[in-house]
Amino acid sequence: MSTDFDHGELAKTLETLYLGVNASDLHGSLTGCLCAGACMGVEDWLDALQLDFDDPGVARCEVLQRLYRSCRSQVEDSPVHIIPLLPARTAPMPQRADALVEWCRGFLGGFGLGGATQRARLSSDASGILHDLGVIAASHFDYADNTEDEQALADVIDFVRTGCAFLRREISAAARAPARVLH
Image (cartoon, rainbow, N blue to C red; front, side):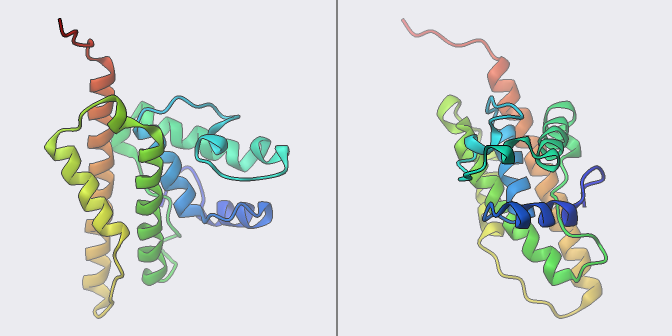
């Protein structure tokens, strides 16, 4: 779904590198960590996500570096443009829906690793969004009517995009707010 990064290319790269994570999960994890305000760079983001790899060249993989730059740009420059990385629209809908579930799982894990909830108290709206993302991450979809299912998937993706943008804006605002001192 991302306009500037291809799910298939990342999936092939991850398979070749034996990182043990799928493309949607990795993109979700990175997006979540960045939305949470984690400070990490192109050379250390795989470590920040606690991915194990033996080859130090993995961190210098061009595809993974492009993924990092693309994701960072989406999150920092314009969070309203956060787009979950899913298989192409030509892929079967069940495959895309399952990838969205994986993306949400990754996002929640990355958000937790990013430490946002340790640095700032989230609003009830933000907590609600995280809860809803958790419901999506725990979901298993049933398919009956292709047209209705396509619309339902589009609606869920729209909610995820909007929710992630809201979380990023709230975390960014909390980071810019002056610290309150208690006497």
